[in-house]
Structure formats: structure tokens, C-alpha cells
Image (cartoon, rainbow, N blue to C red; front, side, top):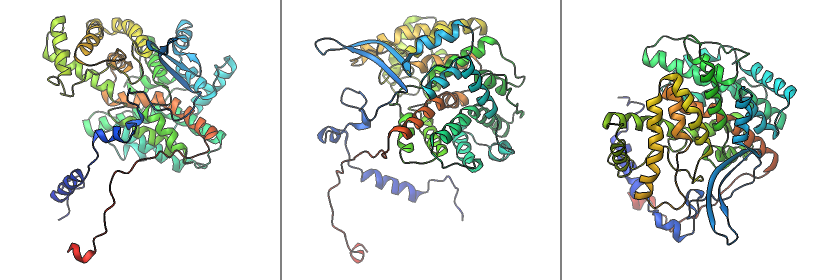
Length: 454
């Protein structure tokens, strides 16, 4: 009898148990062998593995005595402070994502002529090969948008007449095409999921050439294709803030590692997508929204004492998913503040008024004030803790009525810009395959002859 494709048989379970029993690596062995587990030193700082000009993060100063002093977080794209970049396009009432992409790719801000030509190129690339939507998305609907997105990226290899050429012009062309079509792939995958797995009506809108990336995302997603100017501007802002975040995050490092092997662009980006799909990387804002939903079901959120108690129970593992975490707080680098969270918090207020989410916004602000206090009381915190970008992005996506299934794909729609910049940088500067070292801790053992084992 043919077994189910997804079935874990008793044999598989028993062999998994055997594998677990035979794994003898213990946490203390990393200290014994002086191994920086997860490429983090004992203080949680990332181990330096390369050089980059793409972006930088600052969260601490060092005084004249060598003491480390936490400071408000700073994020720069190609040396340009993200706050200045955001202020620039918001002040002149225009969209910023395309400008941020240009800056990340070419290391300078565009003038009017350069910007117009670049956005026209992106618009021209914003289409998929004939029958691609039908054959790759509608005929093979899935339940996970990131899985479909990865599959589509790999499939585009077959439609490229020069997929393996890793010269800079060809890689740049491929990256610009992927940047342009990621919104289409993400939304069409969601529409397919809604139709085939949720029994909803199927509609596929074509992108509008005059629309920005953010405008097209909302146009493609909504049945009537409509949105307000504020909705588009806030989504555009979120894309800018997610476009890049240093070379040390998991998916960007994955891009460097895979690109260093000399492989094609589609394989490198698909690998980055696989990394981002992991709940420890790209899915945190979904957890934030779910945590708040559980909070509103469990307590009177008008009572600050009840909120404090709920947050305390979260850390004790007695609430929500029992993971012992308050989602949306803390960061591997930032301490006093995450500049992306600060910017989103400021802009979320205006959107909450338009969308009628004032009470929800007030609750988020209350939690943002109380949570660091509770965490400091119950945990040993050496560098401070604050709300991170995931805390407010989940709220903004909820206010924009974006489905949770698209939260992580939207992260990818933005971050493809940073991945592209890092891939090009790796090809230009590396020259060697990235090959880390591991210490083997398994003693040698003799080979036991076949006849003896039977």
C-alpha cells in the first residue's frame, strides 16, 4: 500500500529518535572550544565576516576609557541617514522606495533625470513572461506565499536567455527585473491561495505603469484596486525601512554566502527567501499582531495594571504561545531605540486616525512604554531594550487591511533591494567562496565489519 507523501511512519519516527540520541553536542561545548555559536560572541555581538558599503547600523558609542555606551540607534543606506532619507521624500510629498532602491544599488542619490529613467526601467520590467501566472501560480497553488515566491523566482531562470552570466550588467538587469516583479509574484500567489484554498473569487489585476511600487501593491491586492494617498505613502515608507539592514542579518548573509559560490541570481535570491521565511527572521510582525489579538481576548486592555500583568506572564511563558517572549521588543544590535520603529510609530498615528484605529494605536503605545520596564525587571539586560520595527509594522499592515499571509512576502518585496545590492557587492569584491570552519567533536571509532554487525 502506497504511503502518504507527508506521513511520518513509525520507522521514520524511530530513526529520528536515534538521530537525536546520537547527537552529543552540548551548549557548554561551544565555550570549551571557543566557538562563536551563530556567529555571535559571548556578548551577543555579530562576528565580523566581511566589508560592505551598502548600509551601516550604530547602537553604541565608546568613551575615552573604552567603555561601551548605548546610544539611540542609527541606520544609514550608503552613508545616508535613514531619517534624512525619509524626511526628504516625505517633506516633498513623494514616494521614497524607488529612490532608496537607486541609492542602495548605485551608492548615490539620483538627480531628476536619473530618477525618471530608473523608475521607467522598473516600470518596463514590471511584467511576467507569457502564461507564467497561469502555469506557475494558478496551476500550482500553495498555502505558503513564501514557498510560492521562491518557486517562482527559480522558475524565472528558465525564461532568462542568459541566466548564468554573473557579469555586473547582467546581474543588475536580473536584479532590477526581480525588484519589479516581486509585488506581482507575491500578490498573485495570495490571490491564488484565496481562490483555491479559501474558496474566494479570483481576480488578477495588471500593474499600472504610472504607479509606484507601493501603489501597485495596493492596486493589485484590492478587488476594486482603490486606495487612499495616505495608505500608499505609509506602505511606501514601510518598504523603505525594510529595504536593507546591514550585511549581518541572516538573509543578507545568505545572499553573500550563496553568491560567493558563483551561482546565478535566481538561486541566490531564492536562498535568501528561504532564510527570510524562517519565523526567527521574517515572521516576527505576524507574531506581534497575534500577540495583541490574544491580549485583547484575555484582558481589559484599558487597565494598565492588567497589561503589565499580561506582559509579565508572557515572559514567564504563561500566556499566548508560551514562548517566554514579548514579540516586537529587543534587537540583536539596537539597544535604546530602533530608528525604523521610531519612524513607523510617528507615521502610524496619522493612519490610525484615517482608519479608525486610535484605540489600537493607543494600546500599542502603552505596551511600548510598559514592556521595556517589565523586561528589565525580569531579565538580565545589558544593553537596553526597546520596540523594534516588527512591533509597529504589524500594526501598520493591520490598519492597511493587509492579510497576515502577505506580511513576510512584503518584507521580501522591500528587502530584495538590499539583497541585490549585496549580491552585486559580493561579485565585485570577494573573489573567494565563503567557507567557514567547524570543529569536529566526534571521536574516531573503528569500522565494524559487516558480518559482525549481523
